Each structure stands twice: as structure tokens, then as C-alpha cells.
Image (tube, rainbow, N blue to C red; front, side, top):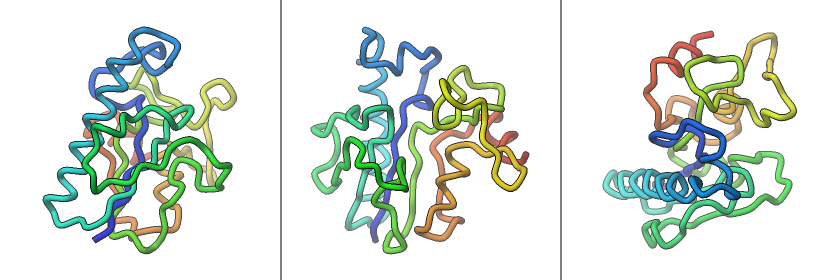
Length: 166
């Protein structure tokens, strides 16, 4: 069973300020560690469930945030950006059994998360597809890959559930 994991930082446990997601600030290291720990936990869960292959896409900012030495040896890490049209889910295709989204966050138009944004908070106020506001998760969950019912994100916050229904 092949598992794809896309990792972002703005939805990891405890993050509440943009400085915590910015490598230029001292607080970043703590949340980089948390991002790596949460991705490692997702990998361990996938392995326990029978995964034979795991591809992890570092999808935050420069794509160079995850600490590779913290991931299980069975996980392959895709870092940086290549300009691939799938962006945050580069590498995902129909050969994967499931896609996991770790550390993802609410969309720009959704309250309840201080780091809510869609793609670029400095360039977009929000994104609509066919007249509906979409978050990064909703946008990328529609990328060709495993069946949509097998795509899940790691947050269970009421705000994300509420916004997903919009």
C-alpha cells in the first residue's frame, strides 16, 4: 500500500502567529520540530496500517522545513519546488492508496484559525472555484490521485469542519 503525505506548518499543534512559520524568526525551530514530529507520527501510523511505500511532500514555504532524520527510513521526502502544476501535492498520482494532509489549515475566508489563508496570504484574499470558496485542502484534494474518500487532513477543529461545509 502506497501512502502520500503532504505537510504544511500553519496547522500544526499550537501554532498561532506568522513568525512561528517563518524560518527567519527564532520561534520557527520549535514549530519545524512539531511539523516533523506530526509527519513522523503519520508515517508511523501508515506503516502500522500496512504501508509499504510513503512519499512525503514538504509543502510549506521553501519546501525545506521537515527534518529528514526524524522520519522513518521507509519514507521518501520530496523537498523544495520544481514548478510542477500539482504544487503542494507534487508526486501524488493514482498509484497511491491514500493521501494524508498534515498541518494543513483553514481557508482565507474562514475564521477560527489565526493563520488561515489560501495559497498566498500576501497575494490572495481567497479563492473561489465554480462560485464556491475553497481552501488549499479542498483545492488539492481534487488533484488526481486516490479516491477522495481516502483523503484526510490531520485537524479536527470545529472551524475547519464548519468551513468545509460552505
